[in-house]
Length: 280
Length: 330
Image (cartoon, rainbow over all chains, first blue to last red; front, side, top):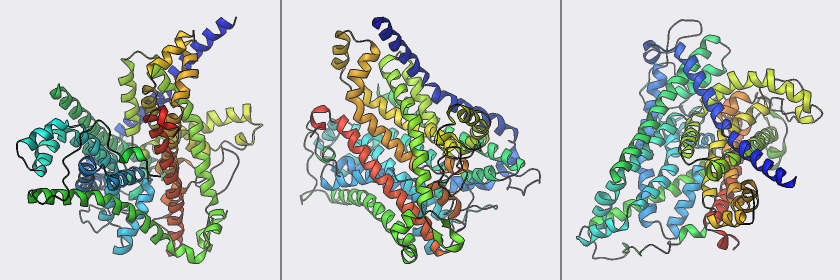
């Protein structure tokens, strides 16, 4: 009897823990199915290229929002990539001391700060001083989110480069800075590019830090000191509105966002795989 | 709080030629070292800015209300300058804890299945799916929650729970759909990738002899997992759960769209509520004055403090497991 019970318990828990995979599968399939099936209904060339229209007016799209997202991500890269990658290289090459440990711990703590809090920081830093919402503030908020994760990933990638490579370069009389830049960083480059793509994808999907930094804009804008639309804020505004017409647009905009984020992720994945194949 | 394992050089690595202090080096080396130090130092500057700006923006609040009254106040009404943070703190805690109740067993179950039972070809497929789930932007989860999850909870799950478990105060009241339950479920879906991937990593570090010893004593697979594997991995899994909890506390958009936006304290999970990130997201851009903005930034400060403590705790726990059992007790 007890033997039977033990076996039955064993089987029951095997089935239960296997079933837990459904907890990933069902939401994932449901989200994808709905975004694709509902979103596709509203997609057209116009949707990518036109300004949003008022409720009830046919046509209109998310052109300014799409451009705004790309624009602010570009601003974020401008500030975030050098600092994030540089700090990562610092951690890998000079980070074994006390200060390095403090920097590493700070980066880890920063990567856990909620994005909405980072939004408040960018608000205080830029919006309050410039006295207006702006693309610059949104971009800086995104950069602040990028830096800690990028630094930690870069550190790990640089540390993966075999020590013998650096030693070989130094033995040939190459100065240390050239060994770092031309041997170590070049070896780690494809990994770093992957990390950059993933952090860009994450930044493009952020909403909370943009709500009160870049705000929104119904018009095309490429000035860094003006409020700017973004895909994510546009989806949020459309979704919480009471209008059926805008709900449809929210799904279509979500499809555009998923396509953007998905492309970046697949590209990153492809790069990792091809560089791994080369390494072998 | 500084983890000591991070600051010491790993024993295997060769001592690098020290770049500091030697005057015979090429000038390029000194410039390179200086540049790296500046970029690394920027991380510390950023952390300083975060703290300074949060206190800076929330400063006008200090003149209106004492910190204690702010934290314990139950009334939030910006039009009368009445700012109490308690309903938001309550909502944040309830939704996050609820999400852990749902997500932790599922994540651990999934991790156990993948590491201990599943055929090896299944692992990369599931980890791809988990990564994909983690890559979905939170506003898309919110959209899905608002138009798919909430109607389902309102018409299916909540009436069912009310009928079967309605004797508990947690499951009483009208099924609204928007509320604590919806937020908890969506947070569970969103934290699942974090907790399960940490759990998988931790389970992989469990030494094989532990399992073999259990099998050798005649244990079934489940008994080996329960008596040998899980006790070893417990701290690390707890760390993963706390990391997920930190994510849940700070998650904004998906929660904002399904929580119902009511600054009340209710016992029922069916009732609409409010969370710290949600009220900041909804009111900040249209705040009525400097004190209102300051009060919202004050809520941000509370949130920042909560996540800081949780994240530090999670890192310490995960590192304790990574370092191995001997030093974990030190």
